[in-house]
Each structure stands twice: as structure tokens, then as C-alpha cells.
Length: 313
Ligand code: SF4
Ligand SMILES: [Zn+2]
Image (tube, rainbow, N blue to C red):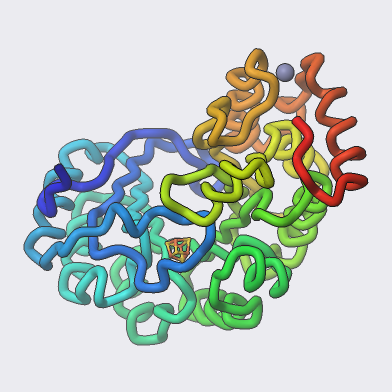
């Protein structure tokens, strides 16, 4: 049973902060959820409840117990932290003041571009160092609007990123590896091109590997056999071959599961670990790994393009 007084999840981890590995805490607050709620792969809205300002503060206070000693705190909402309908302005400010008083060095939040305005930014950036994650997914307007149904343009993203930078904030750009409708090969090319296009607007780029969430359009495509989540080898390829001036990170959530990014079943664990090590160190040598299924992946890349993108393995 979902309680409006307890967060969706809280966990400790390690993250990069100014090229140093630090202790971090991630908190997912339960709010009313994303107002857009139309992206084909997203089931986050199902986590939403009618949470009042007091409920959200209660969730935050309970999450804080786990955050002690964290230099970096990430607060996500299954939507946009800067949408006042999800997180009222007074709650937002109370959360930031508490984190600042605890000595947290950086807060990471997420928002769609339409909620990133000067007033909200001046308020939060006047309190502490904040990195704002924007789910660009792809730099191609065609892929983002037609295949993902994201509802904003590259230019909306660029304007929001410029505004954040002009006021002293940081931008974390999320890219989606393998939106539906792209073959594995096209997905790799799209992610690499998107990373290059997003680089001038980003302080860090996070490659998200597509998962099949329940009760989504993507789940129906997957059930019909016209969608396969990305191979972990495809993520390795993007990370290894992209040469950027900003860190490129990836947390392979759901790696090895049939709804998540996966290889052959034997190597998924160590390939996911290698991706995590790369994300912390940015050292390509972490990705010098192999498995017999790598040749199957290569063959699938070639043949899938000839079969008009229908997944083969
Ligand atoms: S904008 Fe984000 S939270 Fe909202 S539907 Fe799209 S992916 Fe989900
Ligand atoms: Zn394998």
C-alpha cells in the first residue's frame, strides 16, 4: 500500500563529484507524479499519490536519516522537482535549506524544461550548488517527439540549459539508449550523436539504458516481440567510443533482467559492473571485457538492420 508519508525509495551509493568519488544518497519522493505522463516508456506516473506539502516534508525527513555523511544528495520525484504542482515552492525551499545546513555539497534534481524558470532557479541556486537533470533522451527532434512522445524540442532543452548555466547551476543530461522504433545499430548511433550534440549544454551526461516498465506503450511493443531492450554491449560501445570533454556515466538499472538491458545471461553481471566502474573512473580500460555472446551481438547489429529493425535475439 502506497503511503503519502513514505518515500518511494532511498538508497546509498557512490558518485562522481568534481572528478572525486563521494558518498551519495538518492531519494525518490512520492508526489502526484509527472504532469506530462505521455512518454512511451514511462510508468512513473503509477507511483503518484495525492501527497500534500506536509506529506512531502514527512517523506523527506524520514529519508534524511539515511543521508548522513553524504556529500551529494539526489532528490527525484518520478516527475519534475521544479513543477510547483508536484513540489510546492515552500517545500522545495525547506528541503534545500535542510540539505545546506547538513553540509551537503551538491543537490541533484530533475525537471522538464517548461518548469525551469529564472525565479525558481534564482531561489534554489541562491541556497546551494544544484545540478538539474533534464531527460533530453535524444538530440533528434524526430526521435524524441515521434518515437518517445517527449513533448519538448532540442531548442527548449538548450534554452533551459543556457539559463541554468547563466545563473551558476549545473546541467545533467539524460540520454535514452534504444528508444522503441530504432534498431540496435541505429540506437547506438543515435546515442553517440546525441552525446556530441548535448555536450556543449551539459556538465555531465548520463546514458540511461531502456527498461520495459509495466503498463506502458513500450511494454505492449515488447509483448508483441517488436522491441528488445538494449544489449549491454551496445552501452559499452557508446561509452567506449564517445570522446567527450564532460563525464559520460551510466547506471545499468535492471541489467540482466529480460525487461532490462541484457546480454547472454552469463556475462550480464560483470558487464554491468564494468559499466559502473567506468562511470566512476571514466577509464576506458574498465571496458576491456569480453564474452562469447559479443559475436552474436555483432551479428544481430548487422542482421537486424536488414530485417527492418525487428529484434532477432
Ligand atoms: S517526462 Fe519523465 S516522468 Fe514525465 S512521462 Fe516523460 S519520462 Fe516519465
Ligand atoms: Zn555474454
